[in-house]
Image (cartoon, rainbow, N blue to C red):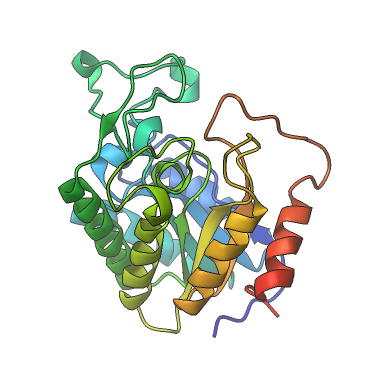
Length: 283
């Protein structure tokens, strides 16, 4: 039900310039500039559904009413200056959370400097840093509820589309991938993808059909034994059945062992395979 003026989409780009999840003057300048680009659809950056789900202390959030109140006038500004459709990407960083912004140096933010505990499907480290805490079943239920609440806030703000971030090694990707999900319960093994299905279904139900729902997904882990394009096809088909209208097919970011064949259009075959097999996306 969402018609775009053209097929040009401005992807979500992390800005690391929020104040406890709240949009700042930087977001007015950044999004106002991009709104005037002539693109058909503009994405607001990855927006954390929980305070502990931020990648850095400066990441945007929708985990509080204060966050929503700060973002509301930015949305209103975009509506006033340009006809571009507006989307938001909802995310939880998982084991990649609590890191410094790029210009503040690499590594985790220590607790004494405001860092926070990280969660993941299993205590499997991404790199030489300490492993994140393995999620309990209660943690899983809470994070799913966080996504739904953030989606409702996005609906109330008047976004035209909402995308769930299921890629780049963040929480939902790490839950789906066998490289990072070593759970022995129903949320591991063949049940790894269940959290993604449930969150997409609940998020879709949080808003009217006039708002397009979608997901950024993983086309490949680029590691033997990891996710492949077949997993992307299966996930996309399920998401389509659950009412999502589009997927953005990305790849990598969940293992340092990845071997990515970087080059012009290297991810296009992954997206083409998903499109061919499922038909999801714009007609």
